[in-house]
Length: 189
Image (cartoon, rainbow, N blue to C red):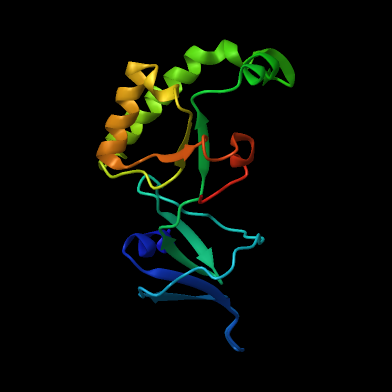
């Protein structure tokens, strides 16, 4: 609990056990509080940790972490990207199937209304921003467009371009210039 309070007060915290020399037989704990603006993670690896991992919340994209026994706050968010395809080849829409519980259920084309709803909801959420009204930094939403896609649906057109104008939230992938099949392997285009 003391570590959590120290982190919330803005300190990095490390705790180590110390067995003092005789005649003392009591285990002691040394708590070190440090305050620095120059902390950064140099290596990430899995490790055994027997204790409480204390994280108040991650609503503001901060995470409470521990390195070399030192507990600290970091502002790094996972780098994530997803691509939304607003238009797909007929072969994909009729030949590729949605999978549910390991089984094919329906061709992807049957989910047009759900896909449309998702794009509209995504645009609205990105427009509003997080709980503080700030833009989301991740995931990066990439919209793969063709010559006709975004213009055919006035509601989607309005939601996407209103958000793009307000936040600059979308990355755009023009498939007239890039092979759409190759674009899924791209990142930070």
